[in-house]
Image (cartoon, rainbow, N blue to C red; front, top):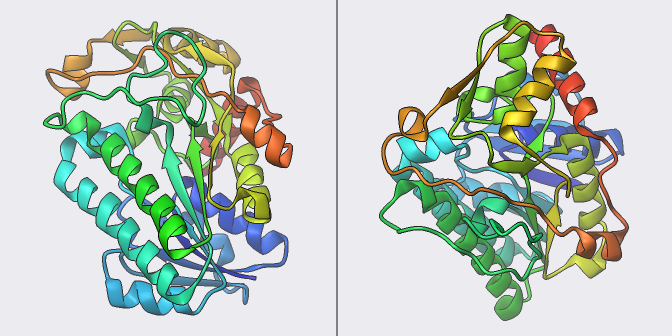
Length: 323
C-alpha cells in the first residue's frame, strides 16, 4: 500500500512513516516543516519506498494531486503544542480547520480511506472529577474568545467533519484521539512536558513545573501509539469510529518531575512557576484527564505495554544522541 502521511516529519508522524516502511508499505510525506523537523526523516532519504514533498495542507491543488496518487491517507499535520496555540491562534485555527477540510475533500473526491489524528484536548476540562473519559463523554471547554481553547475547538470540528463525510458521502474514515503521546523525537519547545523535563534533568537545569503540580496526566509511549494506528488502519471494523489511544495510568506533574530527576540521577532542582507567568493571564488548564481505552481493546485488542520508566529512558537516550 502507498500511504500519504501529512505532517510526516513531526513527532508521531515520523514514527508512523518508519513503521509503515518497515512492514513493506511505501510512504509519501507532505510537510511544510513549520513544527516538523527534517532530521526526523533523514534516515529515510534515498529509500525507494519513501518520498518527501515540501508543501502545505492549505495548498488545495497540491493536496488533491498527492491524495490522488496514494491508496490511503493518514492526516497528522496540525499546529501543535500549547505555546503555538496561545501565541499564534489564528494561524493554528486556519491550519487545523481548513487543512483538515482540504484533506477530507480530496479524499472524498478520490475515494481514499483517511485516518484523522485528533486529541484528548477536545475534552477541555472534562474528566476533572477523576472518572475516565470514554469516546462518548461530553466536552467542557472555556470561552471561545480564549486562545487556549481554539485547538480543542478546531480538533472537535475536524472530527465532526470526518464523521459527516463518512455518513453523508461514504468516505472510509477512522479517528484517533491521542492522550499525551511521548517518546523519542518529541521536542519540549512546544510545551511538551516530558521531553522538557528530561532535557532539563540531563543538563542540570531546573525542571519548571507550571501551576501547582497537582494536575495529572497519562503518558503513552509513541511506539505503543504507532502500533495502535497500524492496527486500526488495517481493521475494517474501525471505519466510521473514534478510538482513544493512550495509557490509563496517571501521574501528577509534580511527581513526574521528581520521577525524572530520580530516574536520571540528576542534581536538577524543581521550580514551581505560576500559569500566568508561563502562558499569560487567564490561562485555564484541566486538573485530570484519564482515557477509558476499553473500546480499542475490544475492537483490535490493543493496549499499551511500555511504562513511564521506559518512556523516560528512551527520551533521555534519544536526547543524548542528538546533543
